[in-house]
Image 1 (spheres, helix red, strand yellow):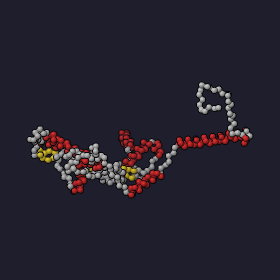
Image 2 (image 1 turned 60 degrees about the vertical axis):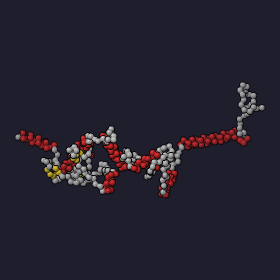
Image 3 (image 1 turned 45 degrees about the vertical axis):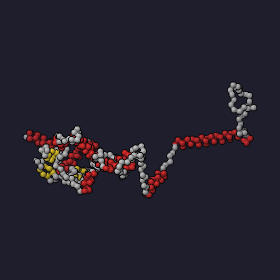
Length: 347
């Protein structure tokens, strides 16, 4: 009996470690099973929080998680490979985006042209059969280049130029084609970001358009010391046209922009507003110096008035002389004969 009692006591102690799955709260928490989120509107218990903060928060979190698990077990379930899976419903609470909405990628020149003309992109096969090599080769990629190199292991040289390197020409054409595609890609990026690009920039005469060549020729002519005045013209020479051509040529002045009545009125209003709202500048040092000068003048004036009043009171009022200083008597001072006198000589 003692053994049975000990086993029952141990089992009871083990069960006390685990809390029940039923949770009771004064206010019912809102549970969003779609987001697997629980919002608890109940107030905190200040006494338990002050007594043991960590234990109180841990118990509170455990209760809310238990409520969420109870809601999940109430959903319809199904078995998938020896596992029970619950179908979550649609979310109730709208959550804000962490980042802004993605901007659609700008179309390239060819994509805009194809969209305008209704041209649809054809899907190409990843591999095509090559009858020369008698095997399937990739349509594009570095493996395609290897296949072409293996196929063109020998090239015919023209009889007129037996020392012509055909492999080098083929390699140069491929490099130029890659460079042209890269320039087109960079131009598409610049056009999408509204960045100004040079009008006369091109890879070579083979890839440049007629308009670009004419513009480059006109700029080269105008780059002389006489700004193209004495430059000989070529037969059937054409002048470049278009916006910005004259600005590219040295020595050419830009035309004045035509101003409208509304624009002129707006500029005048901006000038008037700027003038009226302009605050006067205050020179603190100059103001202090002026104040000191005025105070000094007032003190000197007061001293002169007081001195005149004292003289009048001491020498009998109106008969008192304005200057009481005596004239010096002659012959009392010693004259230095070696020193030359400056000024008019007295007689």
